[in-house]
Image (tube, helix red, strand yellow):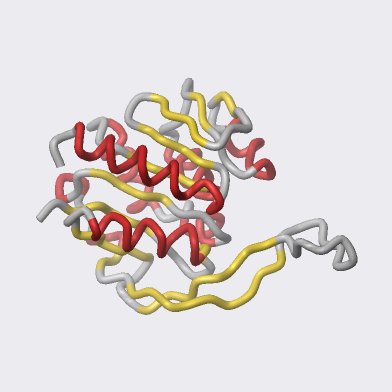
Length: 189
């Protein structure tokens, strides 16, 4: 069975993670959830409250569901995966320092396997050095992260550049997943 890698950590955004997790399985692919360690992780819900009478300058964070990583980053091998989905939330801010994760991201990117990324996931791609010269989108508050990775940031629902597809936030999950699935199928998955 074709395997798709999904790196996560505590505070991975629930909708960024669970929608692709199940959508990829619907296509018959195995989603391998990996984390700093093989264990249960906490997801979070990120949202700016939609009512003007509840002002927030940043997203409010609430606890979400749990998801289990069955593989530790140190045990990952890029050749085991046909592609990768990088979700957002606060997790990328922390797991982007893991050298084993960055190694596998670089290897998957160098092999031009499809990579989908949403929201704060761009922090991982920037840390791995794989977006230089590419055009990407991400949540607006991570535009600087994309630019620090020497990518061109655009505020669009979806951007495809080579084997990379990026989206802003979980509201863009449907077009992101439709495109990522097409990319995986075109790659023979």
